Amino acid sequence: MKYLIPILLLMAAPAMAVDPTIDPIKTLSCTMPVEREDGTALAVNEIAEITFFVSTDQVAWTQVGSNTVCSQQLELTNTPDGQYYYVARTVDTDGRVSRNSNELPLLVKRLAPPAPPTSIEFRH
Image 1 (cartoon, rainbow, N blue to C red):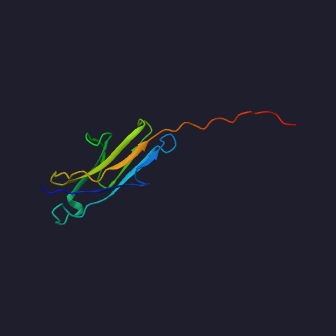
Image 2: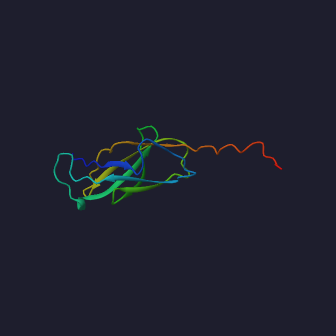
Image 3: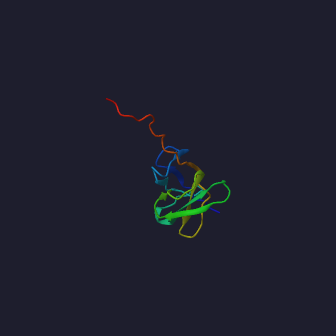
C-alpha cells in the first residue's frame, strides 16, 4: 500500500494554549505531499483531498473537515476546555488514504477575567 503523508502545522506556536473567548478561530495548515511513501512522485492533481482530524486521547480520531488545499479553519468557541491533538491525512484520487501526519497539540483553556479593583473611593 502506498501512503501519502501531509505535514501539519498550526499558524502559531505548536503546543500552544488558546482561550476561545478571546481567540475563537485557528487555522490548521500543512504542506502538500509531493511524493508517495515509496518515493515516487505525486502530482497535485492526484490528490483528492486533505482530511483533518481531532482527538483528545490520541487513539480515537474524529474528522473536523476536509479541503482540496492543505488548510482548515477551526471554530473553537464551543470547544470544551482540554487538551486536543490534530492530524491530517491525504486522500488520493483512487481513494488511498495516508497514515496520520504528525500530531499537533492544542490546549483549550478559558481564563477567568481579572479581579476588579478594590478600595474605590472619592478623593478631595
